[in-house]
Every structure is written in structure tokens, then in C-alpha cells.
Amino acid sequence: MPRELYVYYRVATRDADALRLAVSAMHDRLRHAHPGLQTRLLRRADALSGEDTWMETYAAPAPIDVPDASGVGDELRARIEREAAAWQHLRTGPRHTEVFEPCA
Image 1 (cartoon, one colour):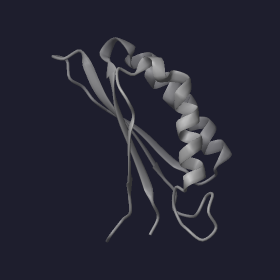
Image 2: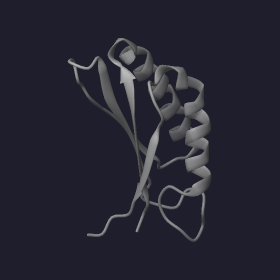
Image 3: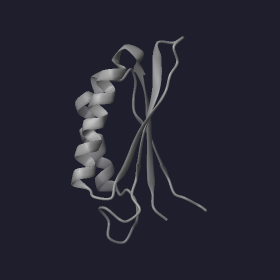
Image 4: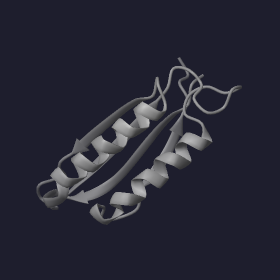
């Protein structure tokens, strides 16, 4: 089954536009370098706290960096984290990464 990544973190509402641009550019680079990679950027707004929760998702229907595995492999996961370091100043806390495998 193909592995998928779900990455979430908090961002001040005032930095939403800058974050959207940074992550969109990162996703464009990753999809160009890894054909078949599917990316999404989601946001859960929380006007009361002044911080929103953002989530990036990564999926690949076929193996990208490990010939005998499927989905998002360790090398691609490491590249995602390296790319995300460029805009870490926009986050108000750490990135949390979860790996899931479809079961149905």
C-alpha cells in the first residue's frame, strides 16, 4: 500500500499569505522533481486564537524513491523537511509529521 504523509503545524493568521506562497512554491518544486507526487495544502482557521492550523499532504500512487516500496519514501520525506526549513520563521511551533498507509 502506498504511504502518505500528513504534516501539520500552527501559523499566525497574519502570516497566512506568506505561508501559502512559500508552501505552494515548495510543492511546485517537489512535483517537478518527483513526477506523480500529489500535494495538498489545507488550513483550519481559528480567528479567536490568532493562529491557524495548516496541513500539507503528500501522496504518490507509485514508488518515488524506493524501488521496492510504494508511496512517499524516506528520501522524499527528508527532502520535504529540508525544503520546509526555508520558511520555518512563519510557523509558531514545530512541524508534526504522520505517516499513514491505506487499509481499504
